[in-house]
Image 1: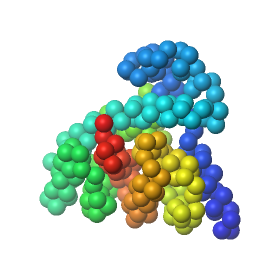
Image 2: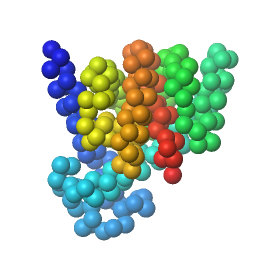
Image 3: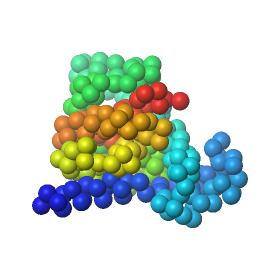
Image 4: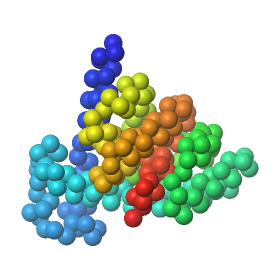
Length: 243
């Protein structure tokens, strides 16, 4: 039983490093951002070869490109959180969310307690998974490197599915122990959860993953909207990654 759980967790971590879908590739091919300006020969291996055949430099460059795309949605998501603050009935939760957004905008990495204080806020209107507005769901999809060009109900369903899977993997990883993962597995797990781990040392990645797991394993199924937003909340300012 323990062996199967360990193997499942390890397979999940490795599976997290798969190449993102057609949305990112399509955007790069059209050249709509300032990141694809190295010509077709530079992008050719990324489009036709799976990740395991990339050179170390290609892995770093391509993962940087993917992260730059998902990071573009971060300010939009934080802005939306600010806009819905007046709709939150509890004054204490309004204060906590205002404080959290202010800290992130000022470049501060939030403490675990700052995020967990908002559990109730993300389980009901207006930030519960079923209450998120269509444009917010689209921004969250981009933050997860998922195409936003689908009907909102389908986007919401897919976000729910992805977040639920990550939540289950988090519980398995917590039981396995971060110390049992290799350096590459740790970096892959961090990247899946929103952190651009390509330029961060192994020890710092393990620390960040520990923070993520502590938050994730404290959440119930009804609170998974907070875990989804944690892709932005916990990663934006970690060790100067906001740039």
